[in-house]
Image (cartoon, rainbow, N blue to C red; front, side):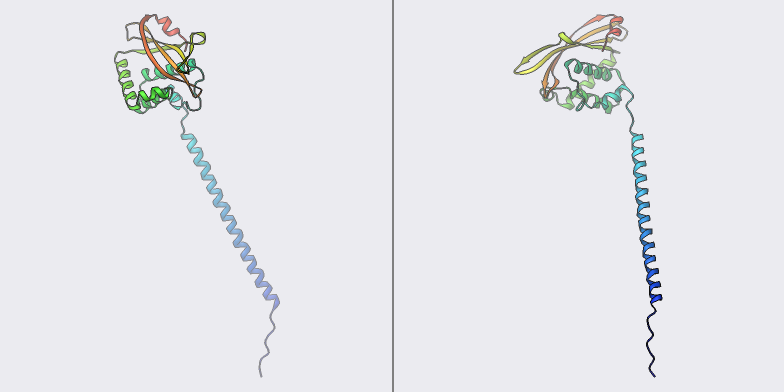
Amino acid sequence: MASVPSKPNKAIDKSVEFVAKKRRSIVTFSFVICLIAVAAIGGYYQVMKRQKMQSEVKTPTTEVEKLIAKDLDVGYPETPTEVMKLWGRLNQCIYNSKLSDEEFDSLAKQLRKMYSSDLLEQNPEEKHIGKLRDEVEQFKDDKKKIVSYSAESGSAVQYKTINNRDCANIKISYFMNTGGRGYAKTFQSFVLVNQNDRWKILGFKNGQQESTTKEEATGSEE
């Protein structure tokens, strides 16, 4: 006698289906939790990395560091007088400070950013920096030191049009300790040209050196 097929147990099927759904929910939930954990860990390490990088970025403190860090592409001096003040500041640092080769080159390149395109063409970088290095070494061998400097301002600055270019004539004075031989004052005369709304050095020449007093040398204002 043939057996009669048993009827499907709907309760069991529903139970199995419920367990399967529960397992899928648990797996999905676990996967989401893992993703959140990975994202959190990644975010944590990114924050720590940024904080480490920020802590490693040294804030300029010395005059050398400040001048090297100065972004002349963004914060270029606005007037001929301000250009000359920065010129004097850079030269005082270059001639007086004990610099590494890298620091010397960086400061010299800052000077070159103040050159007009004409002057840059006449003074190739490698030749210019080499000549400047020789001059600084001789200056230090003579035990000289730039004590202070002063740039002309106001009506002392003469503005002219030369070959259809706006130019300015201005002088800067250096006061130096001449290595136990007293104090001296030296002039430099500059011609600046307005190039793309920035006053750049077109040319300059050294004036005569004359004796001065310690009071004048140390009392001059930048």
